[in-house]
Amino acid sequence: MNTYSIIRNLVSVCHGDAYCCSTHRPCRVGDGDCDFDHQCEGSTICGDHNCLFYNQEDSCCYEPKPSTLSNYGEGPFPTTPF
Image 1 (cartoon, rainbow, N blue to C red):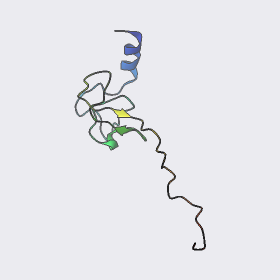
Image 2 (tube, helix red, strand yellow; image 1 turned 60 degrees about the horizontal axis):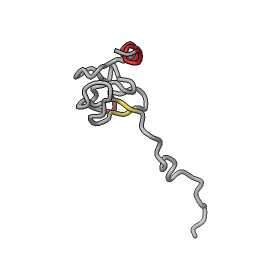
Image 3 (spheres, rainbow, N blue to C red; image 1 turned 30 degrees about the vertical axis):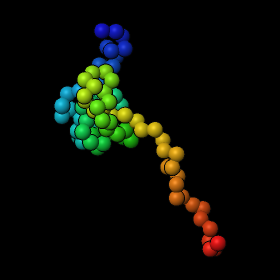
């Protein structure tokens, strides 16, 4: 086990254990196994068979990339018709 693995294990909440991530104990980035977004902390979301540090069949929480359309539909809007 390398230093990175030791540190990762100390700061991780869940290590691929089924039912570990929950609404009351949300997982952080890289932790899993999650099934729903609300089982992930903050703005992180639950992936789909994306865990890299243990069983790749497990789903881990990750930080989504910002959308280029995140401000789509926000003003200012014209006040007169074209």
